[in-house]
Image (tube, rainbow, N blue to C red; front, side):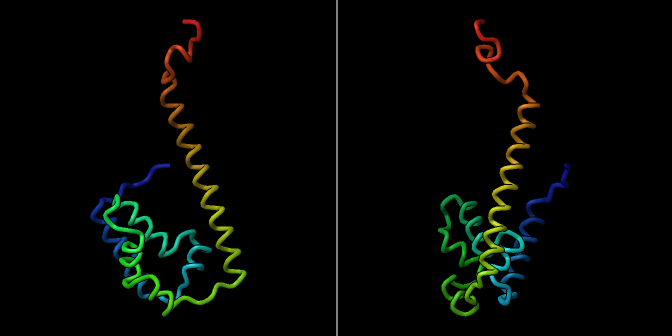
Length: 128
């Protein structure tokens, strides 16, 4: 599969638009995002925190996504989760894990195919 690379400037603009959209759509619950797409506002905040290499804490990054402290957003907008929502989220999280494992396996296989002689002679030719 080939993909068209996205310039960092364009990716940043699209990300800002996504964050703005999620701030507008407070009617969409995080658990529904998790159930349908396998990620939510918290995930975005966590990814921003990870990408910052320690510059932003998880709470700071989540506040940047929510536009307010997460606790305030929850108090204003979050509804109690139903058993059905929790079930969809659990299924989606499991699918994320399976898809990541499959992608890693494909990458490992591609790497092995591209470097057939990457093993040192002691491993590929024992007794040498």
